[in-house]
Image (cartoon, rainbow, N blue to C red; front, side):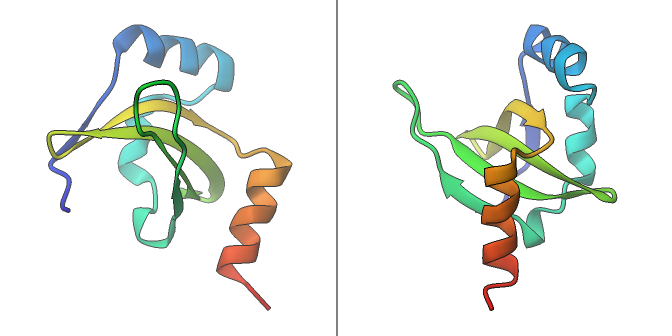
Amino acid sequence: MPYESYEWDEDKRLSNLAKHEIDFEAILDFDWDNAVTEPSPRENELRYIAISYLRDRLYTVIYTERDNRRRIISLRRPSRRERRHYERHIRPY
């Protein structure tokens, strides 16, 4: 499904910026074509976790899908476990 745009809650964007030092607006440079993406069910909403490069660094994005949009929930550097997961999927051997 093609995505027309991104959206996010402005308060959450500011919180994410303060905590992780990256702005949700940087999502425009996220490498979706090479992302390792999996469902991450939470609460009453299906969320996804995607791990890929943003510019020259690996990042994790948590998002949900709404009306052909990706609603960004979190954007941050990956945990060690997430990094290993990404590397296993990109280089399985």
